[in-house]
Image 1 (cartoon, one colour):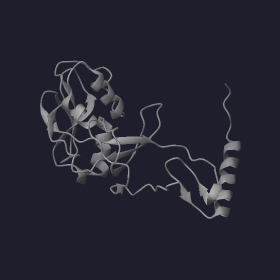
Image 2: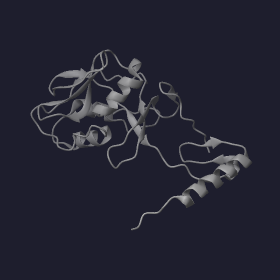
Image 3: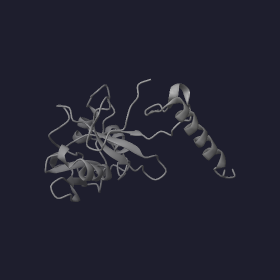
Image 4: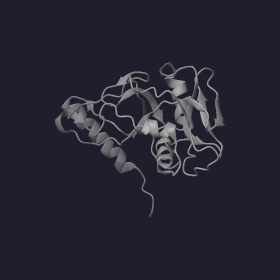
Length: 206
């Protein structure tokens, strides 16, 4: 098993397609996610229009989930150049890049502004039939603009934070994405603590 360690914010995450931007809070009812900003030479996508000015995209209004917004825009009968460019990226074997949501861009502005130019960037979050949200990386402003205008475009990708398992095999507490390297005795002790904690957790009635 290949051990992966969560890097510090602003550092590359090998094999994940770019630089770690931090933990993005999930939409209500959905889990939180690690957010990655690609840094390969193909990552900056230039200036593009959001597209479909004057058309409602009712499934692309999430402020939290850019991946869901992007899927909706790709499924639309209208052209959406910014979302299409992001979805077309392939880096480190990953092809699940998307146009980030409004709040995902806010997280990027707070944590990794150095990866962006001091300009306006499109989000995948529609504001109205004529406008979608943009994020400024000079002063941190979040606003909306007409969808037929061209702004900078930068993709991201995210993956879900998975629960820690309690396997102590081989001196590790294992997870499909993350593992902690421990001495065998430490791993067994931590696994026992986790099992005890789970056993004490009150269960809700069905």
